[in-house]
Image (cartoon, rainbow, N blue to C red; front, side):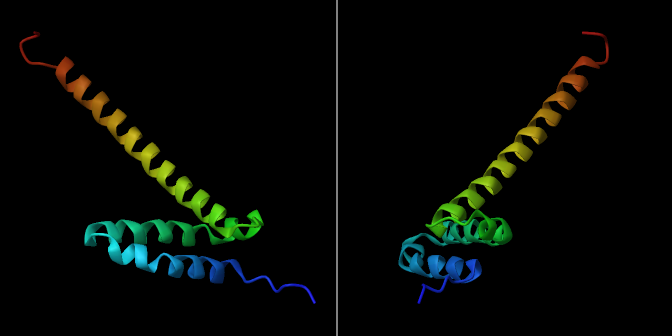
Length: 97
C-alpha cells in the first residue's frame, strides 16, 4: 500500500509543533512575531496544498515570504505617499520662500 498523504493543514500544524522548543526559547515579543509567521502560512493553506511540494516547509516558507513582501510593499507605498504629501506641503509655504 502507498503512503497516506496528510492534508496540508495537518502538515502545517505538525511543522509548527516541531518548532515549539525554538518558540519557547524566544523572547515574548519574538514569540508573537513567530506566531504571526505561521498565521501567514495558514492564510495561504489552499495555495500550499496546490503547490504539491515534497517538503511542505518549502510551501510554508513561500507563504510567509509572500506575506512579508506584501507588508514591505504596503509600507513602501505608505512612505511614498507621506513623502509626496510632505513635498507638497513644503512647496506651499506661506510667504513664497
